[in-house]
Length: 354
Image (cartoon, rainbow, N blue to C red; front, side):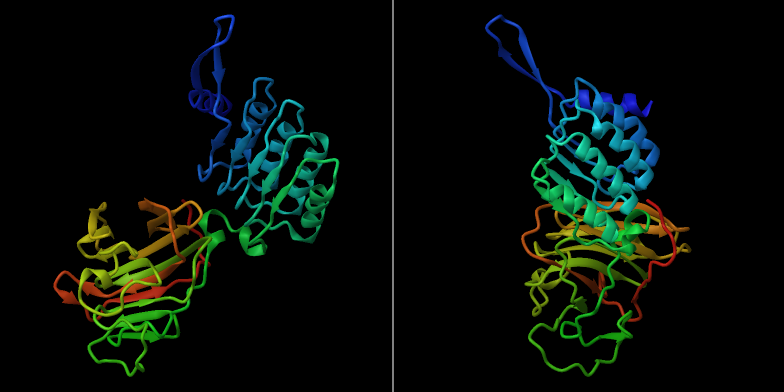
């Protein structure tokens, strides 16, 4: 059934160009790009996809399977299709697919069996290790093979966590930005307090809105989780967001420089450029844990709430980012300052699944 579904989706993406050949027959052309990125595929999905790649009618030139837990067993099944002389793929993206040296070996073998098509291979955010890197680098350097681009950045053992946890980032508070009414403990807990904290003057410190930025400059993929109480704003922003004045230009979510999830007993709302989107409500007695996933290259920032170790999608905003993003947190309600509100940066030792 999955194979039929995949085949149907590819065919459904076809385009008929009403160009007439000299004989008067219509010509059919198919989209050469197909993306199943982040579709919650597993290793068994590749068994259905492999025959699509090896079909004599296959027209795929670019395939994106990133952000799926395919594992080595899935890549072995996929490699059967890649070996076929009918497979004409030129670009294959397998970023963040839980692949190790074993899967790289299967892939290298497939590329040597069908050496004339694949030009670009993305295996970033996996764990090829020294052996896998060596095998694929040999394919890249072989003049008899067509591979021209090999991406193995952001690799390591930590990339073998399932789901979005493989993109976990440890956030670090930029103490030069912290508003004086925010108390920071152990670089993990931020709390709105009535008493001003004795922070020194700094041009990057927020002066009016109780907010702060982290020092992490995001230009790739990054995931983090927080627990919150009270009334808080979980945000990402450009570095150049204003630090002075009570106008919207300096408050998270109310300008073009920031994207923010408002969290309170009233529920969740997403804000950007002073436009608010109310989101599904939740039980006020349930856990108050939120996850953020930034995919900078794709231009998306996604917010989830976490219930019983499951990620529940809240909102995704898509755009084209023009500067690095910085995580940030704010502490204010509709009426102003919200003392007692807090944010706790969480470890991702526990499992959660999309």
